[in-house]
Image (cartoon, rainbow, N blue to C red; front, side):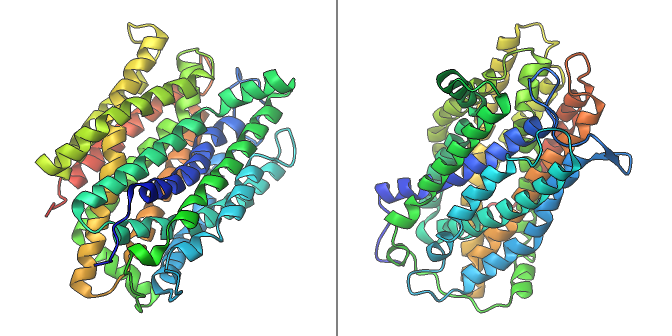
Length: 444
């Protein structure tokens, strides 16, 4: 075992890295559909054509999917490079440092279209910028998450470090959801009349801040002091195949994919649900996201205690069940016998428990899966497990954005909102699938 255990201040530095990339990825999830295909009451201009391909897919859904196709090849490649690294300073952190500046630049360029009007040129620009961003942020995320299994040496420590990670992730969610609020401040204080310009300035600021906090694990953690991970010499394709031989891992992956697809639908649709279904100001989206995240923090001690007392599997199953009911509620938003504010408040209060449970527990579970595999095979390829996991996470996020964008064809404006409500049906089905598959997971 490594000589040193990770102290509290370095656990916080590690969690800061997750907050950084969470801000950027969640900003894209929340703002991309709203920025490029806004509802007609937003004050923004559509930037890509609402054209149908094969009679079902619009351009934005195909663009979102195309960026992740490159990840399908790039994620395992980065994991293989990281797992096999013989850098004397460690296998993970030396790779992470090269990803930060490109990720910040591409995040900003995604929201800097070539033309400020509907154009296919914007569609091509967005495609290439998304590819650049996903490849950059992947170079950070894969080694970063592999560190969890290597620096936390017991199940309890994995859950604790995963909890710190989740705090960083939800802080990133809050800041990304406040993009419109930041744009409001910019317009008021700098007298900027153009809404698109204010949103761009807010996103540039968030991306730069993300880069600064992503540096913290690199500056404050000396990897070799806390990890004894040894280079693995399994070739790329056999390493990928080895992860899929693990039955527990397959059930885990399917459930995780379904969850992140559902979460991406909620995040992508948040501003639409607030402004179109409930007819509230768009700035309320950030407020409700903040309330949900703060409430989820109150569940963290219960999640940590419950994981020790009852095991992690029952809590994950309960979270999927609650989340499925939340999607049923989304379908009826605006028609429930409560005020719009109360309807949204009920939604975020109920969502706080699954957000906490499904944020903390899956990474700790995967760290155990990877560590057990290392004990059985003698090969340290934790990076490959996390690469495959985050490939499915990003595929889930992309499918969520693509499904949401596709369903806007059937209505995304006040008085014509059936497409938005269909997202509730899709999310419900996804959560039930996740629950059924994870019920087959064997917790040791």
